[in-house]
Image 1 (cartoon, one colour):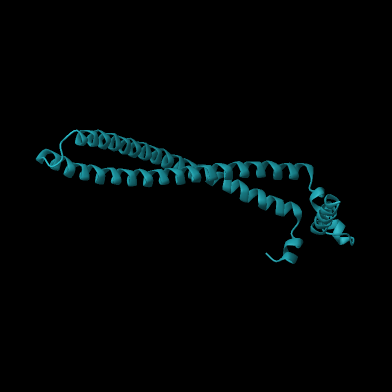
Image 2 (cartoon, rainbow, N blue to C red; image 1 turned 120 degrees about the vertical axis):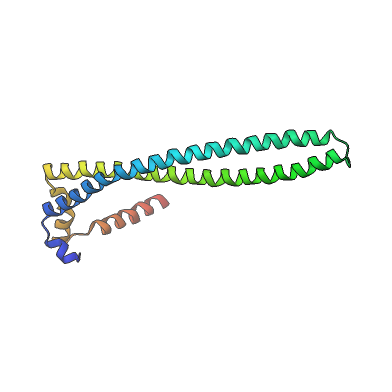
Length: 172
């Protein structure tokens, strides 16, 4: 929307539009949040299982390596165990890779869930704020516009001036 056209809209209409948008978002987010929570639970279970398999592989490989050390080199049994050890190592690497993939999936799911939770909280706070503004009036929101219309400095200019003056005071 163009700036001029935006200024033509009555403040109450604009506030109601903002409120309506936030209410629609607040209705949609819980559905997405439930889906993400299910995804997160699945991801946690996959990561937990993969970690257990990885840890089991590591302990089996360690026990196997200890058994291998106790045998004389060059014997047929020693050669067989070396071949089996290579297979153990390959399986352990696969387990580690699988665990890392599942852990990454879990972290992403957790992050999405947290972002949605924060968005829902933000919507709820916003709804409360704009409902309060509608009840108590919105004159305080228009004070900056009135000051500029009367020839005063904009809020941006005031903030910049305050920052400049504040920075000069700190240097002294």
